[in-house]
Length: 362
Ligand SMILES: Cc1cc2nc3c(=O)[nH]c(=O)nc-3n(C[C@H](O)[C@H](O)[C@H](O)COP(=O)(O)O)c2cc1C
Image (tube, rainbow, N blue to C red):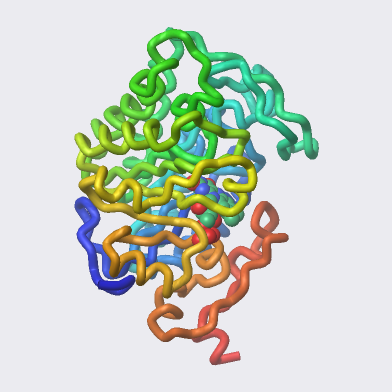
């Protein structure tokens, strides 16, 4: 078994296991609506076994970066519809990543200039990019107990909107220090109600959101992403093996299309993160495991052959190589990604990376 062994992923049979990781590119148009440029970018990458879209906020409150697409207005749904149609025309499949950033936002993005919301009033260290340049993170407002059902409803509505936009499924963004992850880990969650304290309480929002999203899509068109070792966005947990072990074990009950896990990175370990690799979860999780972080083709094939992962997602390699599966198949060299054009801008560094065929014709 390797990256080119077809796999049943929930409802879908994927022709390969080379998955496009979710990648924020900050190139949505006015009103956070996907544009023709975004349509072209995703259509170029349709040979992925599955595309997972860039994170897309389920509400204005859930937004935290300039020019990220939303999935909460009729214009955004219409914009995404053009993306999903183009990917389908090219024979691909695309899931939308459902996102609420929580405290990783700024009042200038928030409705009425309000403070960002979070489980507890604890700020992220450092600065974030706003429309007016870099600004320090603000101390967020702790959500009231009675507001939490509204957060679940935002995800449920986002899932319904993704269905209307013609996606093939959705991935719940439970990773990288955004709202669901903030509830899960005790470095960011100091609540004393039934959404804080014990692991069961901290995991409650994740599981309620999963239930709501599965209620819209059915279990076999839903995935979820977790980052057990990540310290990004000032995240920490006193016992990540126990915290994430519990959530992953609970997720078994949903029989989702897949569980998407970020491996520990060198930066996480430098920042005091405790390494909890995907292999730790293999005996706990009964479904498809998708692994991510710094994989190349050889490492990906080894992970699949050993049974530690079923699929591998690729981020930066897909930014720079629209035809990544074909390049892997032919053992062809890869275009290097340019980090200067990751976030924002136009087609440069976005839709102008050449395919092998284009290089051969040049
Ligand atoms: C430009 C950029 C944007 C990203 N945006 C997202 C995102 O929207 N959602 C998410 O879950 N992860 C996001 N990530 C993380 C990637 O999905 C992936 O975990 C990371 O790039 C490591 O994989 P790689 O080593 O194959 O690049 C982003 C990473 C990069 C470089």
